[in-house]
Amino acid sequence: MAHNLVIFGPPGAGKGTQSAAIKEKLAVFHLSTGDMLREAIKNETETGKLAKQYTESGKLVPDEVVIKIVEEAVSPLPADKGVLFDGFPRTLDQAKALDAMMDKLGRGINGCISVAVPDEAIVSRLTGRRMCPACNLIYHITGKPPKTEGKCDVCGGDLIIRKDDNEEVIRQRLDAYHAQTAPVIGYYKDKGLLKEVDGTRPPAEVSQEIIGMF
Ligand code: AMP
Image (cartoon, rainbow, N blue to C red; front, side, top):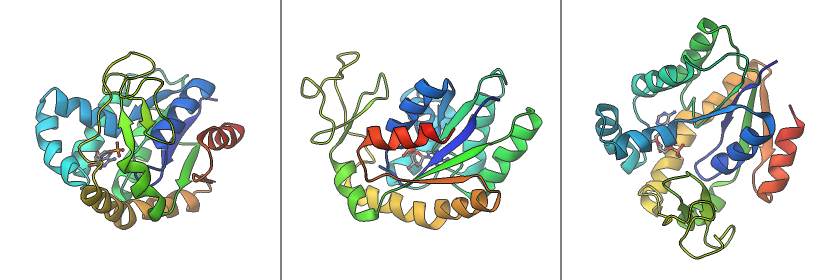
């Protein structure tokens, strides 16, 4: 059976890093709403113009905008290969919309991985985070430095600091997480789909635990 999974956790929990490992080991499509929104902003599409003000201030983009881009991305995918939703759903309404769209597509969510990291660890993680805008790969200046400073190991491109990785915006994103996203954990728990992992351990250990669950 295809694995249709959700991964979530606070910003900086390592969702992107873990998604790359899950994608490789479980051969699933990877849909990250954060990546899709950043792409739309870069390309200055209508969605991008609307999303920019929210992402840059650490607020959640309105449900209907995000639900639409996810629906457009997931609908054409062949159902015999699973999908990993990264950073979606982030509100209860998004979780309900995801169930409805998966139902329509003859798919179902079979697991939700919650990567837990306490708030204190998040700020130091995110202020040191660097990203390759071409590959979407994630580095950290001390935790996972690139081989050559400031350059992506894979494509050699210049690494960037995400605009929303500054302390003020990080705090705003954490607030959004606790207020709007944490309740989604209960939604999946009630369905018996929740799998919690301790995201404070080294990334490879976390990946191993996640892969072993499916
Ligand atoms: P991420 O890369 O997952 O941390 O997402 C970066 C930003 O994109 C978030 O802080 C939100 O502003 C926006 N975003 C990403 N996914 C969602 C979502 N499912 N719902 C609302 N906003 C989102």
